Amino acid sequence: MTPSAGLGLKSQHYGDAIACDAEGLWFEVHPENYMSAGGPRLAALEAVRARRPVSLHGVGLSLAADTDPDPEHLQALKRLVDRFDPFVVSEHLAWSTHRGAHHPDLLPFPRTRAALDRICGNVARMQDALQRRVLIENPSLYLPLKGHTLNEVDFLEALATRTGCGLLVDVNNVFVSAQNLGYAPETYLDALPAHAIGEIHLAGHAPDPGGSNLLIDTHGAPVAEVVWTLYARLIARIGPRPTLIERDDDIPDFAALMAERNRAVAVLASSQTAREPAHV
Image (cartoon, rainbow, N blue to C red):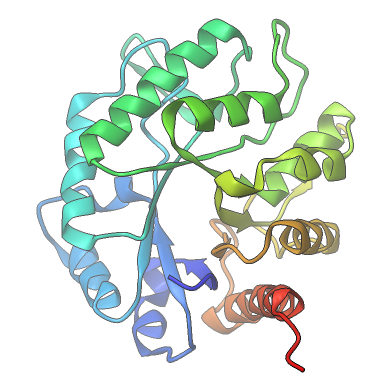
């Protein structure tokens, strides 16, 4: 698929999504919202998929947990993959389950060699179950965590090298983590292996309502200007990649999301033009 920009598909926008005729538009959904035998939600996704490519962005496999991914969850995901033939399947570099308990968040872990071995095994199990390459997303982080022996970029690069997976780069996550932990987001983005990057996410953030100096990855605001600048820098280096506008809270109308999507399209087009050889 030619790299273009898409939107996270929301139920209030099903009609708009089906009717929209924008060139190159695609949609992403969380598969956990569609793991049912039938019903109107699946029917709506079928109607969207009949016109547009889709991607599946998982939030529930808990790949960084100390246990294997839930086989029933993997089977349900495989059924969706077979049914909708997404052009990308992705998951998070995080954990959310422990000893049968499910936590409503994507939680961090110490980046150690042991964690790398465990997560490589879980990513391999996911790819084996789905019979396809998956992309793994960098997390948003809020506080220093003891025990790291690998920096995040080295960890991601090793994960991609050992498993053959790709990377989903969430530029907003990079900015939020950099601000919270005190490093330069440009340095992080410049070090990522270009060949492994299969998709990019853009989203909004907000100050911690509790009054701390933290930034929170809310997905509840427009993409910040600083994130647009970082995105343009990354695309200029690596070339066009499928790019998603994420909005999961305080969701505006479809036209407002399309305006952000069209801004991403312009960045992708500009990069493509800059890379085309001159004709004499």
